[in-house]
Length: 164
Length: 275
Ligand code: FES
Ligand code: FES
Image 1: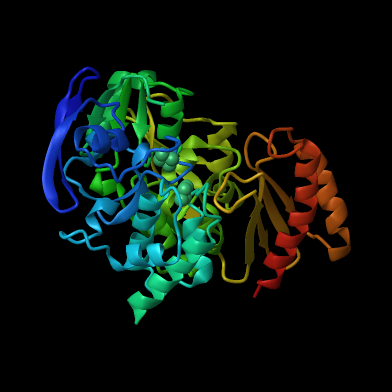
Image 2: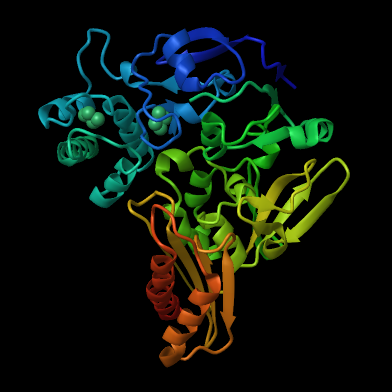
C-alpha cells in the first residue's frame, strides 16, 4: 500500500492531453497546483480553491471534476484532459472553441477553460441533453463577465452540431 | 488556500484501510470523493495527520440490491448512483433527490457514503437516509456493526462513528410501489447548499416528512393520518419544534416559513404519486 510522508516528494506520472508526463508532489499538493506549477498546464485556472467557481475543472479519466478538490498524488496514472488539448496541433480551434468565439461567450476568459471541459464531458455522456440540462451543468461554473447568455448560445449551437 | 501537511496512505483493499485506521485512529481521516473534505482542509477548517484514500478500493465501488435494500459501497460516486438504470423504480426518493446534490462536476467525484459520513445538516443524502430509515454499515478491525440512520446521525457534522471505524456501505430500503415520494429544496442557485430541504413519503392516509437544513440533523415527522385540511396546522407545529437558526442565507423565521410552504408542496406532490 503506497504511503507518502508529509515531507516526502514523490514522482506522480500521468497522461496530460495525450502525453505521458510526470512531476514531483508532496501529499498536500493540490492537483490544480501540480498541473500548473510542475507541468506548466496553464489551461488549468485557479479561482476559489474550494470547489465553488469551476475555473479549475478538468477531465480525469473522462469525467469533469474540480482539480482543486483533488490531491496530485491521487492522480497517479490518470488520464487528464485540459482545454489546451482541444485545439489542433496547428493551433486551429476545435468546434466548441469556435462556437465560443463566434457567440462572444467569453470576455476575460478566466472561466472558459473549465467550462469547455465540463461541456465536452457532459455531452459525451448525455449527447441528447436539452437546454435545461445544459443550464444545470453550467450551474457548476461562475462567470463574472458575460452574464452566461453568450455561453449558453455557444453551448447549444455546439450541442446541436454534435448531434447532426 | 492550502491544507496543512499530512501523511498520505492509498489503501488498495479494505483491510489496508482498516489497518491504517486502527493504527492512527483519531489522527486519521478517510478520503473518499473529498468534495466537502478537501475544501475544508484547504480552508484549514479541519486538519489531519494522516489521510487514508479509499477511492481506489474496487471492492467498495458497487451498487447492489440485497435483502430488500439498495446497498451502495463507500467508493461509489454520486454520478454512478444517479445514472444507475433501476433507481427511479427501486428507490424513487433517491432518484428525486440526486439532481439537487451539488453540481454534475462535484457528483462526478463525490461519493454517496462520504456525504453521509460528513453529515452536513443541509445535505440531501443524510435527509434521504433519515426519511427512508436507511442503515449505515461501519467496519473496524475489531468488528462490523450496522446503525439505523437515527442512531448514526447525532448532531451537526457529528456521527456515531468511532475513530477506528469507517463507513463501508449504506443501505436504503427499496421503495414500496404503492407509496408516493417527493423531494424539494430551496437555495439561491441550484446546486448550492440548501437553505431548507424536504423529503416526503405518502402512503394511503399517512405521511412521513423529513426536513434538512433547519435543525442540526435531518428531522423526521410521521403522521399516521393527515387530512388535507390539517396539513397547515401540522406543518406549523413541526416548524416551531424545529426552531432553526439565523445565518447569512436566511433567518430562522424564513426557514420555518419554508417548512410550511414547501412542506405543503412536497406532501401534495408525494400524495399525487401514490398508486
Ligand atoms: S478553483 Fe476549483 S472550483 Fe474554484
Ligand atoms: S469570461 Fe470572465 S469570468 Fe467568464
